[in-house]
Amino acid sequence: MPSHAFRLAALLATALWTPCAAAEDALPAVTVSGTATAAVEKSYRRMLRGMDLFERERGALAPQATLRFKLLPRKPGTDMDHLTLEIDGKNFETMLPIAPDHTFTLPRDARAEAEDAVVTTTRRKLSMTWRTEIRTPGLPTGVRRLGDLRLECRVGIEAGLVSNSDPLGRIADLFSSPGSYCGQADARYLFFAERPLFAVTLVNGSRRETLPIDKLYAMASDDPGLKHDLPYCDCEVLVDRSYFLPLGDKSWPNDTQVEFEYMDDPPP
Amino acid sequence: MKRLWLLLLPAVLAACASAVPDAPRMTPQAAQALVAAGAAKADVEAALGPALRIDFDDGHTVWAYRWPDAREPHDTRAASELVILFDRAGRVQKLRLRPGYR
Image (cartoon, rainbow over all chains, first blue to last red; front, side, top):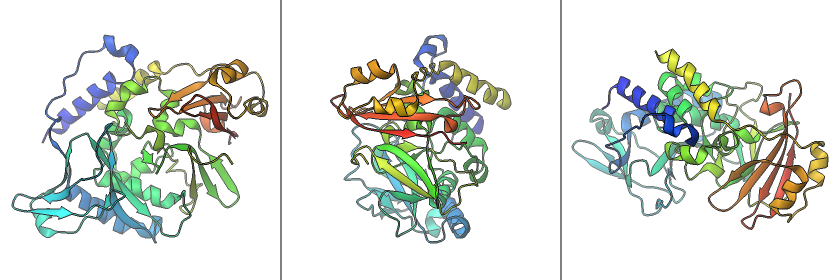
């Protein structure tokens, strides 16, 4: 396990290295090693912490919702079918079923917790990313609930799922609790929609507000060096599905509906 | 030390951002009216000028024109936007006009 100081140094080096191609020649080279062939894995204990947080906070944010975890591609060509997922402890392995939409639930297992097990797949590290999927049943197609998404952020950070977001986001993750990070009005927690997005609109009663374009596409509109930065973002193959929300803006209640217009929807 | 880095990083990132193209010299509604379904990128650029451009790997492209609010020129929430989606052939697939919010 790298020391906290080492992780900080690595992240800062990456952050300084990645902003844009124009600065590339002026900055020192950074060598990254030891991650290319390791498997995708997450800490079972951290994921349990996320599940505990979900149970504690669901009443306030998403009382009818259920929690699942979701696997998403991070690199082009990643085969998301034929995945296997398991809990690996020192003395046991337990296979976990994955739904066709690549979601799964994590069972509570005292042995896995005691052995500090990992949840791992057959894919190489950095080929996939993880998110929570917290959904209130009964919503129309193409609509999410803001309280569910607020809780997704909090559980996702508590569970340690977001390991590679934008450089500033990563640094914020290191020093912030889920409450303080996800409570920011401008929190940069990347959500991913089902399909490529054209617009995201918040709706509460008669109030409607469409997000500006710098809240879509991983802020690509404000980052001409995005192509260069993408390998460091877990949105690399999901840019057209990504969006930020004003999670900490209390003027939008948890029942606010988040409506999606997809690129392939017919024009209104 | 930690605080110093956190202060420096936004400055480094900001230095790399490109200038946002100036808004077309017309109202957002007038600009919207000039963009026809099926129009080519060259036609749109000839009518409205350069846009913020986002190219996606699947061949789609999004262009955006932004009219900043005079009182909050750096607040993108307050800005009006015309957003245009081009299909893989480079033709206007659809567009939308977003008002500024205060």
